[in-house]
Length: 401
Ligand code: AMP
Ligand code: MG
Image (tube, protein in one colour):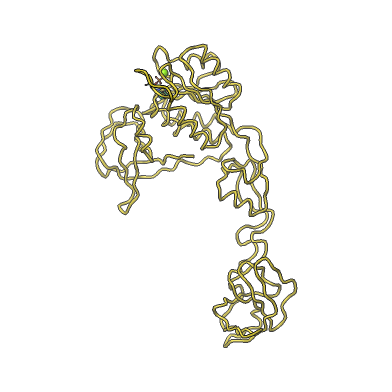
């Protein structure tokens, strides 16, 4: 049995981004990962422009003591441009976003002026640069706007479009095979016989994989049978970049996943000092990383969140982000006796009292409602310990995509 930190480090060290890139339309890029940095081809904004509705003027024409009267020679809505430079004594009516005409160095808010026909009175106190957004204020041409490894979110797609990108180079989407094992596991839609359970693992895992942005290869439900497993594994090892199975990794008579995996690939570890999730099998199957999760829905989902998800993100090419953790005050009473890292399902609250956390209730590994209700995992150290009201604990945010 190895420790959680060692298991995590092993998996991460052995995972590399997929090979192969694709060109996709920016509009189709949600969830994809940049395989090269996005470099700004031009300044944003591309031209100094007005931050206000008002009058563009030359401060050289203004007076420090009192107001001056200028002649309005043009009207500039956003989208229009004035090519010629302003002469002495001239002003331009300008709208927010319109480019500053050559020679102007200040925009005076319309609330501050007095307009009379084509004459406009400009008060004292207007300074060069006032109400002007300089070119490149947001982004300078040639700068890296998004780094390689950026997982594209809606705002990133908007930003890329603002720079004129139509298509971007992203990593190929990894193919992740999922399969459930267990003779007692059945598809929803048929009445359950005594001893049967519905295949909740595959539903939850498929959804988690889709949210992550990989391609799912659903290999369905496989019976606890060497030949059936071998056939499913052969296909998975051939077609997928990663394989996730659930069930069959414990020490029971029908726990055949490890045995079949060793026959077709290799196993790197198969027990981790964590709770839930002690039985699991990590290894290789052909070109693919193999994650044999425990059948228990709570255990399987916990191992997925803590180990598989970060590894899949790395496989997708995404830059590594540390898990979002913080300290919170524990509310309740709890005694931990075993010597394994414990990952309790918790509900964190953020209110005036500061962050505090309670467990979701009973923490048995068969209690799937605990995962459904949780927004954090409470991370407890390996050593036995007792927690009382107010004790500080570390929590880790449960990510949903
Ligand atoms: P196993 O890891 O195969 O020993 O399974 C452990 C427990 O998880 C058993 O109670 C199984 O019935 C249950 N289980 C296994 N696979 C699934 C599944 N796909 N969906 C829901 N429960 C499952
Ligand atoms: Mg089983």
